Image 1: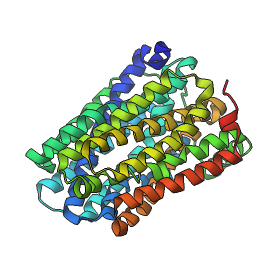
Image 2: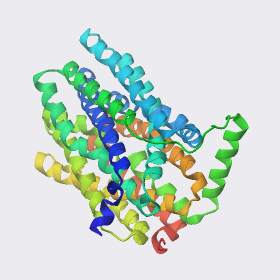
Image 3: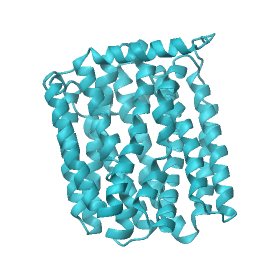
Image 4: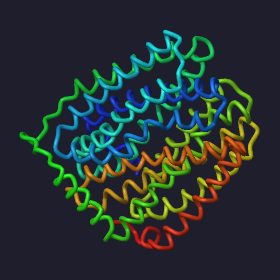
Amino acid sequence: MAINAIRSLYFSKFRQLMVTHILICTGFWIQQIVIGWMVYEKTKSPLLTSLALAVDTIPILFGGFLGGVFVDRLNPKSCIIFVTGGQFFLVSILTTIMFLDIFSLWYIYIIIFFIGFTWAIYDPSKITLGMKLVDKNSISNIFGMWIAGFNIPRVLSTVLAGYLIVFLGTKYTLLLELLVIFLSFLSILLLKYEHNISKPENLKVDQIVNDVKQLFSTIRYDNLLTGFFLLSFIPILLLVPATTGLLPVYVSDILKLDARGLGFLQSSCGLGQIMGILIVGFAKQQYMGKYATLAIFGSACSAILFAFSEIFFLSIIFIILVNICIAIIHNATGYGMFSIIDERFRGRLAGLQVSSFGFFIFGTTFSGSIANVYGPSTSTISCMIIIMVISTIVIATHTKVYSEDLN
């Protein structure tokens, strides 16, 4: 079991890809702390802050699936090189604006929006490339590795970013993000990988439409696959927006802390997700449906406790529990979907899964709007009640998720 938890790391090329992934995610978390704190400090609006943290998911909603379609036909390493270069350029513009002391919410929204296009390409690229760098028995493990790589820097870089904001300011903190993105560019550039497809196919609109139809047809007529797919939306649509999406508001208004408090809470989120990955890594793969189901209800209950807490250390404990469950949901539903679907559709499914993150903007708008009027606690509790109702309906109509063991 211990070997299964880290199996994919036995492949040297996958380890190098993980270095790139960790660096890219380090830049992302530094950016989240900077943008979240700066926007709420300037506007005092939970809604505007939530939107600033989520506007990069809009391109993912419309472009994530197309990214998967392209990645199925292109060199995934080249796609990641493009992503890191594009992010460096866009964050350079944002940093320049900060050094010129030009604060405009619209500048921030526009730049973060375009960064979202790079994520629409990156996620299916990393999934596709990762699957090519490990053996078949390690594929289930790489989903846990992606979550670990997303959250390991979250534990450390968010605390560092909080302290840098307090002592140096936001613009110098963005310089650190630039350095990290540049290192990620060098890391993927040095990865030795030969793409098997010598001549990429010419994409046509009717081919893309046909790809979409084939994928949805495959999902629609498989009850188990449909169930996993629907449950995978839960964290994106309401759970994350109503908890971590409102952290700047909780830190400033409920817990009465500065940017360092935000860094510690975000770090706790990362720690919780790493713990969740380890739990799933030592669990039996055939029970992933049961784990996902229990984690959804566990996360909702933990989030409600977090909403009631006004004590910093209790808030840390509850947000860790929420994120343990989020990691279990992501890993269990991801393994469920990709182990069931035919290999021909994996890139497209990865793209569709990435596109689902675009629904984050709807969740943040909803939770942020409630928080604007009634406060963050009421917003979180309301969203958790909705999650439990929706999840009950999905499980009742797709009973195989809970009752049937995976091979």
